[in-house]
Length: 125
Image (cartoon, rainbow, N blue to C red; front, side, top):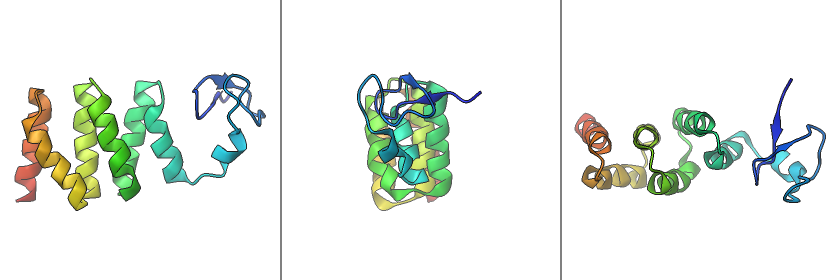
């Protein structure tokens, strides 16, 4: 059985709901979005594994439109392992603004995040 969630409030809904019974979101609008857009939306999912999976996939797809949402997630998260995954994804994307953020992360207060940023910067040289 498949479980469906509202893409705005993330509460469980029925698979045939057109509007979320909790927040009123139009589910059909979300259904029309592209795969990458849905992955970016999943960065706000309450389940940690779903977020990490979305981060990883966005890197493999090299989704440039995900850079700003990924940086925002990095800045809001207190999970150092998620931050490391975000740095890997930004490196996979490889855009100048993504790389600039990785360099900025060399000053992170979290040692394993600094170490990951350092590994990436050394790889790039």
